[in-house]
Length: 306
Image (cartoon, rainbow, N blue to C red; front, side, top):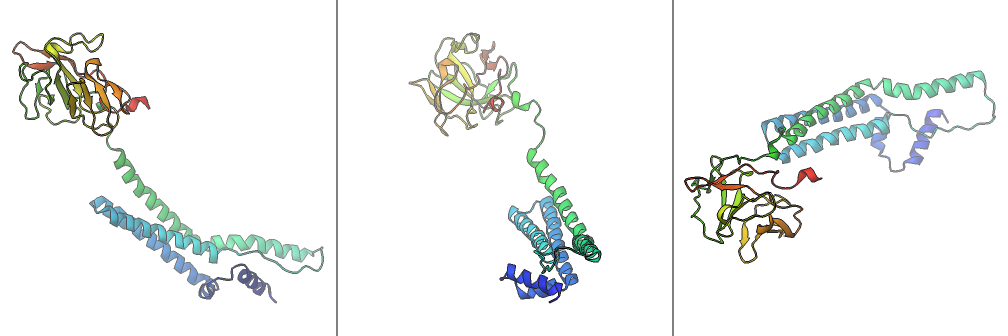
């Protein structure tokens, strides 16, 4: 039995489920190389098509299908390369004596070195295709990655549309005067010129008729019983929309966080980790409610606490 027959016999013993048709291709490495190259080309074409569809803004289903097909082509090609073009083992032959001649040692060294290098060097075209496919997908992946990060927010998360002197207006843009709300009344308000803004949405509450101090240092923030708190919950950013006059509490309907209005909106129940930011209010000479300044801390979930 020749050495080639011995290798084929050992391979059949290792993998009895081996497809005979693939064995025929394995005996013709040039054809197998073309088949693997076709798989890599299919993968490259799918990645390029996925890039085109992404730039044109197609559906994510199409992009996902192309990505799956691209990785499928690369995967099939790599598996076939490793299984049918790389050297197989184990390589065995009968040994009748421990010693070996110089010719035997030289033949073994040549076979050992050549068995691996030939399989790689002769397949350099496949390696280039694989590298090209990897590079294309790597370049493409930068687009969605950078897009998902979005623009640099800078200090935008630390400030809102509220500024010193901003008039308090309704969602229709009407300025609020001191007599517009009765005790127990509340409404959603915005800074003038920024109606509908996410960071500007604020709950205006009239909890009494005299000045209210919610905590030391805020002696002038609640003129004539008016209090204003950010409407954005500090837990998950849900809009707070319920005010319970009997208990003087604000309720977030998403996760049932409760905030004490008269105690600087301290959370008294639920998962909210910190109070709602309070907006310092004032009343101008014409009786309109205005902001003394913007919020003294960022609104919404406390990202800086993590």
